[in-house]
Structure formats: structure tokens, C-alpha cells
Image (cartoon, rainbow, N blue to C red; front, side, top):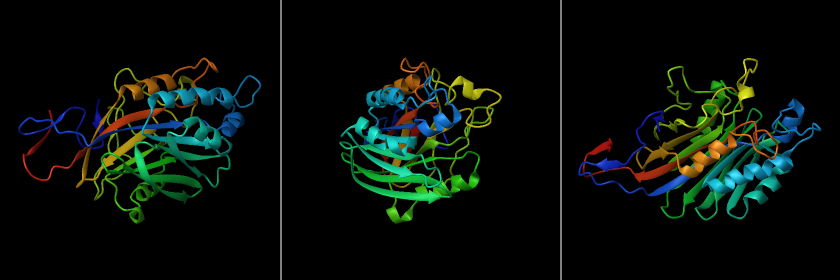
Length: 308
């Protein structure tokens, strides 16, 4: 696994004496564009309509619910959530999750959703920004076991819009909410941040709190976010790897290490495949997922050498 956007990781973190540091917590994160039914019918998206041309949400959602249920992510973000499906999704996730919905004001059918596992998190604080017709959602939570504060932000971006990314970064640094130990930004960015040589351009600038990083897809995982027909030459948007999870540990309080847990890997593989319910992918996106190890930032004592 390769960590990008600054920082190292992917293996045991040791001090000079050679004793492994113990993680304060491990947190799994999933992000999934579930394909809004209204858009699926309007644009004739093959993943979202049946032979009659009407929505097949009743067939698709149980499949996606199964992927999510097996992954059991601690933090979950969804994009293109039809407002009439919010109750269905919340009920499907069950009492294990608290859900928060943020509706786009200028896109009448849909919005974004954040869900947090009730047994893992407490004291949720919610903030929303309506930015030029697009809703950004934010939920601050406290990890029950470690006491660490994590901020989760999600958005559905237009792609190649520097001003929108700057607004999202500023929102993620919302000073009125205090400074979290870890900030996670997820979403459908409609932009592939990879260059031709495989390097990744970080979507957000480094600031006083530190830098963001992400986890590249390792061998055996799909290299793109959407089905093969969405990569065709005639497609003008949404090509490549466009669903991302960015993570920042506060430079003075918490270090983070990213890795892919087996359940997240399985969910990614399953969601990037044809399902028997429809004969297509369950959405016109596969999910993105990873896990985060949280460590105390070393202050004194043995000189920190980094990963072995």
C-alpha cells in the first residue's frame, strides 16, 4: 500500500529501541455514491433503471446495504442520496448507525449523508454549509474508547473546480467547532488527482494542523471508480479514479497511518462488480474505503525514526 500526500506509513511504527507503538484506535471509513434515482431515470443510467425505464432502487439498495453491512465501517459517507430514500437508507443501516442528511438546495432530488456507528462514537456535532447550491456536510464525533475527536466531512464536487475545493478545505477547518485530532474528507470529487507517473496531487493544501494524505489502490483492486462504459472516449466527466478519502492527523496531537482492512477490500471488489439483482453494478460508482490507525504524537523520549 502506498501513502500519498505527505507522510509515511503502511507498516509498524517503531521508536529507536525497536518497541512497536500501540495504536490508540483503528477506525474504518467507507464512501459510496449510491446513484440518485431521479438522475438515473433522467439520464438513462443503465445501473439505475429497469427494462421499463423506471427506477430499480428497490433492487439496488439491498445489494449496497449488503456491502455496507458486511464492511461494518465505523464512519460512512454517501453521495447522491435521493431525499425520498433517506428513511429507507437510515432504516437499512439500522440502530447501529446515527445518520445525518445534508440536502443540496439547487439540486432538488438529492444530497449527501454521513453515518456513524453508535457503539463507537459519542457526542456528535453537526455542521452544514450550502456553497453555491452544493451542500457540504460535517459531523464531529468523539471516539468512545480513546477519547480522540474525529471530524468527518463529505461532499459531491463538480470536478476541476479549484474554488470549490478551497471552500471545502476551509469548511473542514471550521474554527467554530474547535480543532479535531483527525480530519477525514470523503466524496465523489469528479476528478482524478493522479498524474501519468502514478503520483497523486493532494486535493487540499497543507496548513497549521498538518497535511492530508490518502491511500492508493493496491494491486488487485480496480484502478478506476466507475464501470467500464463510463471510461469510454465519449465520456466527458467522471472518468478515472474520482472517489477519494483524505485523512489528516493534527500535527501536534495525533499521527495517522492508513491501511486497507480485509472487509474494506472485499466491499470495494464487490461494489466494482456486476450484481445478480440487476445484471449491472449496484451503482454507477464502486465504493472507496480504508482504515486509519491513530497514534499519540511523540513529544519526548526516544528519537522517532519512522516506519521500518
